[in-house]
Length: 122
Image 1 (cartoon, rainbow, N blue to C red):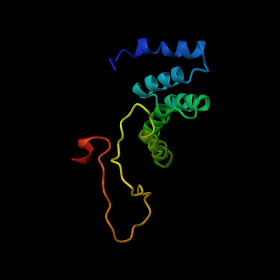
Image 2 (image 1 turned 90 degrees about the vertical axis):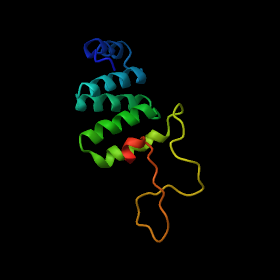
Image 3 (image 1 turned 45 degrees about the horizontal axis):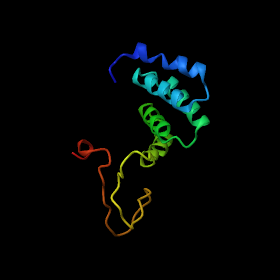
């Protein structure tokens, strides 16, 4: 976040010392993504998920990397993990209605939610 990517690259040493640490591998992926090394970032996110398939932040990071590369089908699938991190507040208001899956709709109402903030809605 501070733009000190060379220093952050030390995360690779952490991964080399403990390649089974999914968090260290994911952090390395984040650093690579910040440096626009998308292919390498994707490989690291996938490595982290091979270690811990239930790691929401790695799925979300993978989603962003895939979407930036234009891999929309897989990217949007991974993007759904944004709803799963335990430390993130509910993005969707409580409802007894199903979430729309993109299928054609009959008559009815579709409620749109700006789950990424007001900037996307404007």
